Length: 233
Image (tube, rainbow, N blue to C red; front, side, top):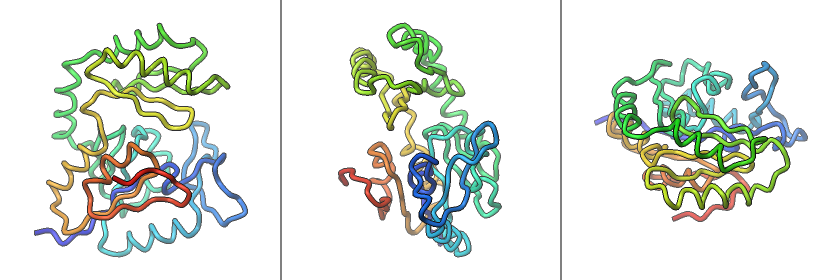
């Protein structure tokens, strides 16, 4: 039996904060960069100290995030040699020592082959405002970013109405970003896979979004950031 304790943690708004949400009256460290190389997200010093203490112990930290591989590599945590595993793309990708876990990749690809993400992208673009930033991310999911001050609730209602007739997809909503994901894509499934592979004696989980509860509800202890109001069930 493994003696490891594993800490599965969401990243954005859990471990690191976007510039818009960061309280710069507190001591901070850079946590991530945008595509232009500019500082974009930040750790509070206390959070960074907590992470370092865990990494220096026998506890395994596994970032469990919606970030893509390229986006994850723009975080400072991804460069820490003490991080061996990462769950990315809402659970579609697992990295082990910065290499894609091919067994998990094959499982996901076998399921992706049975649906058409390109068709989904086309249909979503047909029903939403053309000024929205709508992209297919790594063929895993459709991302909708509301960069302009459209009504988020209206966008959400349109997509939810569309998905009522779709059995293979569901909606993830976070602030002004939306993701339409295949039902087999969920952080929970990747967490279950790694728990089975690593057989830890104890698991911890942290997240800020209601969707994070899917994986947090299968681990032993939940951790929530301050001021996050989500129902614990």
